[in-house]
Image (cartoon, rainbow, N blue to C red; front, side, top):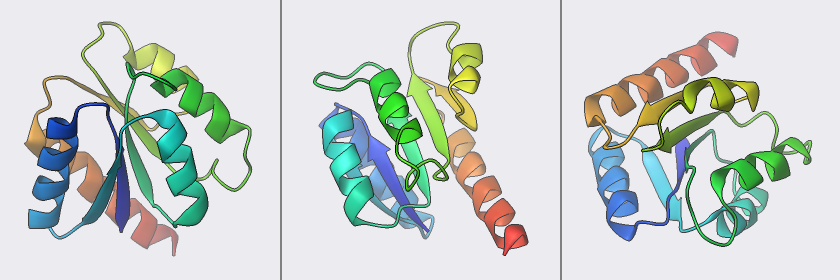
Length: 123
C-alpha cells in the first residue's frame, strides 16, 4: 500500500513517512494540494492523509479537485487538522475519516491498518 501524506509541514511529513515505514507501509509526501494532485496523477496511491490548512491549494480545494477527476475519486482520504469541528464537514466532502492534530500516531496507524484490511476484503 502506498500512502500520500499532504501537509505543508516538512517535519510532519517526514515523521509520518518514518512511522509508516516502520509499520511496513510505503509513503511519500507533498507540501500542498497542487503538488499532491500531480503526484496522484502519476502514481497509484491507495490512501491520502490530507492536512486542511496549507498554502497554494488547501485541503478543501484539493478535495474539490479530486472529486472532479474520475481517476482520483476512488482514493480514500483521511483529513488531518488542528481546526475544531471539522469532522462533519470532512465527512460531507467524502473523506473516510478525520484525525485531530497533534496527531496520535497509534490512532493514525489504526486507521491505516483498518483501511488495508477493508481493501483486502474487497479484492
